[in-house]
Length: 514
Ligand code: NAD
Image (cartoon, rainbow, N blue to C red; front, side):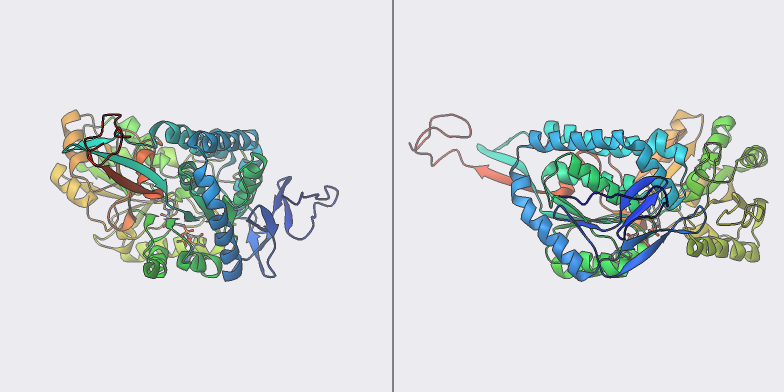
C-alpha cells in the first residue's frame, strides 16, 4: 500500500511528506507495516553540495518506533515460515529493482551526503543490489549445517531466524551500510526496522519503495526516520527488538549498548577506525603512492580509511614527494561532476569538527606537507586534502578518528617498530601493508591487530568473508556465514538412537526399542 508521489515538475515543489531531489521523487515519511506514516514533527535535510534544505523529513519518536517494531513482530512468523527459496526469490527481485533504479539512487545519495556520483554509479549502488542477491543465493546454499554424529546421537544444527532486527546506520555510505545488514537479516527470515541517519535519510525511503514493488510483504522492512536521540534511542531500548546491528561512532555504540542491556539483546557493532598503512622500503612505490592517495576517497569519510601512513625511513622522502605531487592534482568540487575526485564534507558541524582537529594538530607542532585547512577558493564545505608530518607521538591527531581528508605520516626504522606503531591504537578495524617481500607480508599481517589486513591492495571486500573490527572498532563479525550466526538463533537438536516406536526418523534405521 503506497501513496504515490505526484510532484509538480513545473515549480519543483512537492506536497508535504514529499521531496523532489535531483528530479527524483522521494517520500519523506516513515514506512511502517507497508504504509507511509507522517509525524507531526519534522527535520530539515541539508545537502552538503550547497548547504540548502532539500527535504523536510518526518521525525519519528517512541510512538513511531513502537508501531514499526509492532509491524515487524506481526510480519515475522509468516516471513520466517516461508521456504528459504521463496524469501530468496523476493530478495532477488529487490536486487533487480535496485539495479533498475541505480541512477535515481545514485543522484539522491550524492545530493544527500556529498559523496561522488561517479562512485555511486560504478560501484556503490551495484554493491547495494549485491547485498540482496548475494545473501539470497548464500542463504539458499548455506543456511544449514550437516548433522553431527556424537556418541551415536544425531545432532541437528538449524539456523532459526531470531525475530526483529534493529538496523541503525551512519551517513557516510547510508544505503550500502544499511543493506549489508538488511540483506542477510531478511534472507534468514528476520524482519527489520531501519533507522537511517538524519544527515542522509533519503535513499532509505527509496529502498522502501523498491522492496514494496518487489513484493516484500508489509512489515518485513520498516523505516523510521528521525534523529539519534529521538528515534534511535527508543529503538535501541525497545523490548520487542531481538538483534541490534549498528554502524556508527564509538560514543553512540556505548549509548546503544547501555539502552539494550536490560533486554539482553545481541549486538553487532561496526565502529570507527584509525587504520595504519605501512610502507616498507622494499615496496613497489608506485603502488604505495596509489594506495596512499586512495585514502582521500569520499573526502576521507570512510571508516576503513588508512589514515596513519607509516613509512620506512629510507623511502619516506621519496614516497611523500610523489604522494604530494599526485594528491595535489586531485580535483575538488561538486560531487555530481564526473571530473571531481574529492567532494565536500557532509555538513557544517562535521566540517568544524575536522577543522578543529587540524588546527589543534598544527598548534601541537604538526607540519602540513599538503593542504592544512579548508579550501578557501571553493568555500562551502570543501576541506583541502591534507597530509601532516611530525605530529607529536600520542597526540590527538594520531589517536582520534578525524573522519575527513586528513592523513598523518610517521616514519619507522624496522619491522618490529612498524608493527608496534601500527598497533598503537585503541581501534582495530583494518590495516594495509605494502611490501615486496612475501615472508614479511606473512609475518607482519599475522602480528597486526585488525579485523581486515590488506597486503598490496585496499578495500577489496568479498561478501562471503568476515568483516568487523577489533578493540574499539566493533563487536562481532558479519559476512557470509558469520552474518547468519548473528541474525539467527543457532539451535542444536540432539536425537538419541533409542526410544523410537518405529524406525529412527532421523536415520531411517530400525528403532532399538520398537
Ligand atoms: P553516529 O554514531 O553519530 O550515528 C550513527 C547512527 O546512530 C545515526 O543513525 C544516528 O542517528 C544514530 N544514533 C545517534 N545517537 C543514538 C542513540 N543514542 N541511540 C540510537 N541511535 C543513535 O555516527 P555517524 O557520525 O553517523 O557516522 C560516522 C561514524 O560511523 C564514524 O565513527 C565511522 O567510522 C563509523 N562507521 C563505521 C563503519 C564500519 O563498518 N565499521 C562504516 C561506516 C561508518
